[in-house]
Length: 240
Image (tube, rainbow, N blue to C red):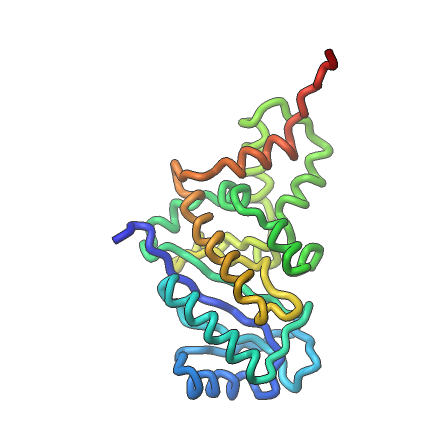
């Protein structure tokens, strides 16, 4: 059994023809998915009669991805609406809490292509899904870096100075709680519940990203590319 077993939960911002409580009840009755909770979400604005958020229990990763497909199919058949005001948040962690406490936020952010998934969902620029890299690149104009160690130290400081993680595409603040996990907020948007293939692909990438952010994690080449392309001077090519 892998020491890197992961668990996952979801938050669906939706519009529904039924109240959020009745939506949860119908899901339970129709596809036997239990433990769903509702939350009032003032930012969700759809043409549906009711707007809000549904929160799932925590499941083992494989079960969570299977249940996600079933829930999305139920949404499609029962008049659920998702538009640009709707987020789809993924909460993921290692089953072993000790591993979650070892996750490095800077590596977590630099190893994940948040820009790609924000673009896929047309969520870039949303006030609720701030892009760490966009902000760092804008800010770095005031600084010049000559080596990778200096820029990584600067990025680490800037990331830990961010005031409110709730509105970033990767919210790592929960890692500092008694129930540590990472909340990925980059998914959602118009018809996200109709895009299971894309959403599940992103989730698999999120799961891999947790392991990269552990001490001595493997597969961190993307981090190196980001740092070199965005923060370090490009080598001058001398024509022959």
